[in-house]
Image (cartoon, rainbow, N blue to C red):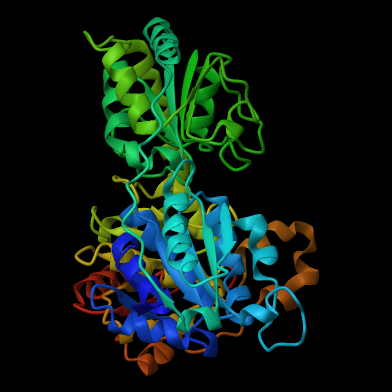
Length: 525
């Protein structure tokens, strides 16, 4: 008979991602020991629990499978709260395993060290949570946590494991079959297909729920001659150098095309504040809305044809219904090209650095951004060509995301070029994870944009900026020396020196292992 800790480790090896991020504590010792003996599972030691949760998020977005991380009780768990909220807001499947105080103390507040009501603290930002009460229940609940994370609308789940039960005997459960994806209602498919055949100016709006249906979005757009705009989470679902691409929905091209369209097919999109310019974007009354979560349909814009279903299944059903000679829609295609061309000309004035970055970074690379003014502008002026190749904390907008999420992305795609782009403010919140990059021998490339300022806050300050200088100006360390202290090769370049910047970007991307390039933008740029 194995121990409960060993049974949990077996379940993680069976249904988990093969990688577990975490930071040990006294309450997790038995579980970490069992994990160390589990050869098919890689444990990645991060330097902060928030980094573990962000790394799990990056892993999940790139791999398409739930990411997983482990924390100890009390402060170990609450250190990860912000990152879990980011995953919750962006509908990313992440499983949080949290060890607790011994069962006699759970929920009693008797003064046990690291005591906290973890379930209550996390309840608003997880889809499902449970606390194991006996040893045999624990591995079954871990199994269920992974099933819940990937079923329906993907979101974080949490399983709490009291320390004392980890040492008791338990049996690992049999593998559970996957839940089949939700198919669309046939009549709704027919109604949607009829509307698609009859329209003249269609636009597809692809959100994060369309990431796994990228091929279907591309096929339907080509067949319909429909323009395609994406949300922040959907960026890359449709290649942005395609003639039908409108870029992100809040660009001028995306906003104007939606206003002129006579039909919008929204796929896995919640019509968030950013995606709709504070809900000011005009969306056609002829709206077909596909989403796995019925609660988001009619939330901001009423749907004429709702389709509650898995995005890929719904789009395949529509493709079968509208199959036939592709409609020409030549005038609409020309108008889409005109809107996109005008948008590019407008953003060119603010995209010099973006163009240099896009020219240097390989087309197939995964770019992971942190919260920064330039990074947000890159949604409009940095083309992306494939699903899950531009990651950004676009919902909760939590700083410190970039480097740990890049670690997760690199582990999900070991052979890919993974580039972390971060401002100096966001980078400072997670720069300790450079130690994780080196310890795990991950070839993450870091481009650090240093303007010695919290640029986004300065932008929002407006007329109040003179009074806020003390709280937006940053006195930074020598980032190149800091990277070198961690063991990374590092260089520094001024963004104004274009030819040298190009050369240094080539140097960065030629490095076999991790490396850092600091790009000085000038004060407040």
